[in-house]
Length: 278
Image (cartoon, helix red, strand yellow):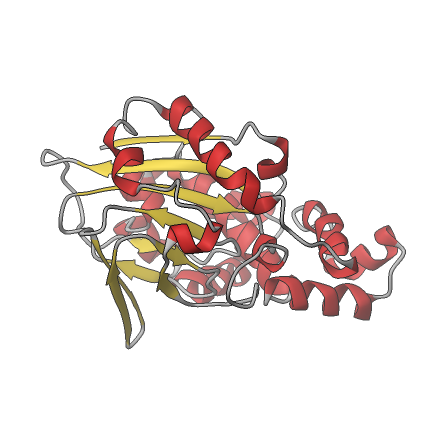
């Protein structure tokens, strides 16, 4: 398995893009062919060759296609078909970023996997997936700089309004501030922050905060062997009221109890590891 993660260097791109990442499954890689993608409030733009197929299953729905595609924010777990070899680059956008960018859809689109014509999206003929992927595994800094150059003219056409500006103030508070206190911190009414957040992201504050907490939990558990997991300590560290509260949280988020998750370890972080910055 080859992978890397890079931050954008262009300040205009960095306003909307959280990071770039790369993942390649090689013939020698073993493990489950159907990893699960945990709920995520952010959108990812996946760059793949025109013949690379994809399949994402969620409950009774299967979304398939080939080439470049969007993974829009999702409140439920996706199961991916990774049984074949693949090589992809991901562009992870910041929560709510698509609201301000020039796209042919609403910025709050949810639960969808959708093919995308990159040249049409960014209104440029400069984009070629095959060329980007050719040296991607070995040249993360180069790929990051190329993507900065491709995306910069597009993001410079962005539009901001009072709702997107307010959401940008809300987001850093979600991982350390109770929802009921955010309005006081920002000197806004609770109704105002709730309405702006839902308008920009398509998610409620509670849904987004739950996803942020889930990601922190999964990153924490990834570093531990099963025998080293202390669920009582996890309850305290992540400020759950008690162990049943933790159980409900994981069951609602990924469809598994803590014990079931510890036995199966079938999320993407377990299969492909935690991506560190290159």
